[in-house]
Length: 292
Image (cartoon, rainbow, N blue to C red; front, top):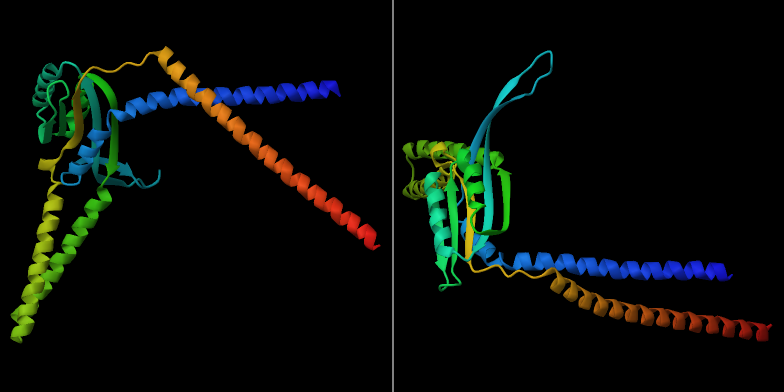
């Protein structure tokens, strides 16, 4: 009996300690992620506002085998894709890093498509949207990642081949409709019908112009990959490990005690409900015995 109680007691203590350790580790990891994310929120907002108005696409040509070993069939594939890199850095030597940045952009024959400078000295921010040729993308990305103290960086690549094909298919369809309408116009008819045809043709012309602009982004001469670069002036606030441990320990103790208190009240409430149900069952049993 005593041995069983000791085992249950040890197991209960083990689970309580394990819960405390899990909470403590969670708070330590959360502290690192929260600090890292706070430095890049404004840059992300800026880039979200401008990327909708400017896109860069690139292409990659390769061959794939769609046949079997006995009858090989090679198909040429022209893939259209969008490749975007994001680099957020911070430096106390803002002017020097800015010169290095412009030098690297010029060296790689890249172009600055959007630029925003903001803030007073000591708190300045430089945000750039850079278009770079696909074959020089990796080189420029690696060089820019060495500027200042990198806060975050990532690369994403999205396939745009189907969208490109859909735009071309829509263009072909509109061209056929326009040709048919022009042929109808040559046959003559009422003035009202002629005006309606002219308006319809004009509407199709406007759609074709819009498609032409979108398809122009896919032209080989306009092929670029995108690098979103943000340089923030200021020294990086380094938080010591001991301070992180102290904050995490304070939060863990407070949260742990609150959690234990909640569990205690829940257990007490459940016990009270079960006790009431048991009393009611006993009361119903007595009544049945009296009736019999």
